[in-house]
Image (cartoon, rainbow, N blue to C red; front, top):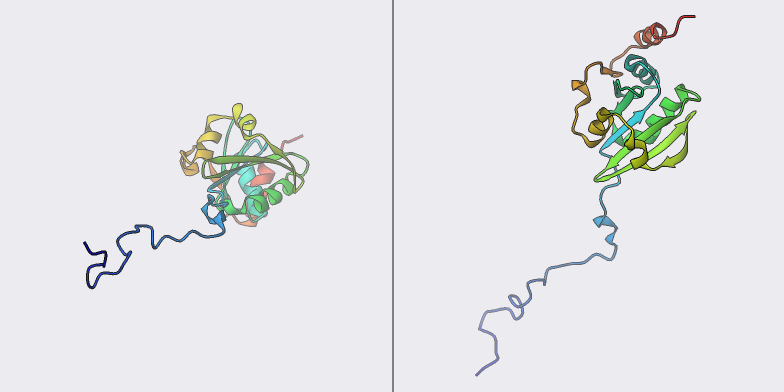
Length: 172
């Protein structure tokens, strides 16, 4: 019995099914993307139109959705969550806002005041008493444009935004 390979065959070509497998030294590329797929800012602003107007003045593109706890800004660019939230919280001065970001199956929550992140919050605690609309927006199960009362900041002129804010001020 001969152990010589068949003439014309390459030794080992069919023997090892993992011959072409390459394992990189750096496995960090296997992690899920760090870019958020959804970012929402929960505010205490009572009227969605006023929040959309404020976001327009801050040059932040959002869909402002009404909710029982305050208007929710659904960011058009989820990757700009920190920058957008800083701008929104700067306009709202001392009223805290909460940025919720979803990355793959993970949700993070941070509190912001006067343009600065003040602390990280447990997302489960933030969502435990939240209205259903917030959870649906965060999970991507609900398109903000389909919610009654949603107002977009996109395309609002500075003049119209100022009128919307003035129209929602309490009269005293």
